[in-house]
Image (cartoon, rainbow, N blue to C red; front, side, top):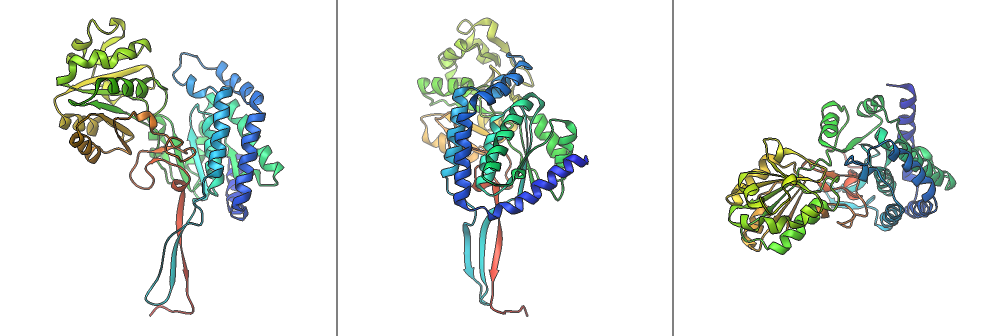
Length: 417
């Protein structure tokens, strides 16, 4: 491992131990000062972000993720304040009981220690990760992508200034170089990093899982479907599909596939009418394409192929597949879904209940778009990622999800026979 990177990781590990001495009131005050600093430093942050944007083609779907604006920085500052005002889970007694031998046993929530996050062109993640980690008593090591290097350096520089002004150890947050060597160092940082969380596309997540020697929580990759049921409402369906697909196409909760019951194919043009105005390219199976023909721009209507339904588009593109039943919709999701977010649009309560029971995903919606899968929307203040795995946290990960627990046992001289 590179000696310089080893020194950085060692400093973060040391700082993680000192975080336990910072009071809850001090954590709140520090995050409030950081939020104010974000508001006051917009010009500096936007200038750094502009340097990154100049290196990316605006037509790249990741451009929207990379871009900071005055409004987005205002939202980021407000999210930091929200996190500051959330109750810290640290010290929460999860379980307490006295054993027959008189030992008092408590299971208490504690920080992980050092959380490493590897992410792509999303500078807002830098703020989210630090605020959640600091509030929950964790130190963090950040490994951003080269696309956002200038933005991330400016953001971490601002955080370091706020920490230094408060007399706190700036090593509690570190930004590694945006190099492959730094990624390898993070994934092999046994004894330095307690858990690694990749945030990005399937290729990044697969690489981290396949190469890490430290624990990993998988997040982010989303092949997301909405099923328009035989009993679905057209106007509601149009609203949900449009919002889920076009609100922000580059995020992991965006809609990738529309499943439609074959008895409702005649309503497909109405369901998709607003997508045409957003220039959404539709990749449809034969029945769906026939239903849309003459009602949807021909230049935006393509044939689905074997890869269509396994694709996380992250763009103004969407697959459509016709199904004969709720069973077929559930089977499709079981085959192609990534365990992120799925949705059913229906007025049939039995169908809705069955969909939520049988669909295996972190977030399963009835008559609401998957765009709501977000830590802030769930009242978590922000999120460090959306876990798609089953072991450990699942779904949007806020403060509680980035803690673990330890057992505290108090006795009065008992010995084990």
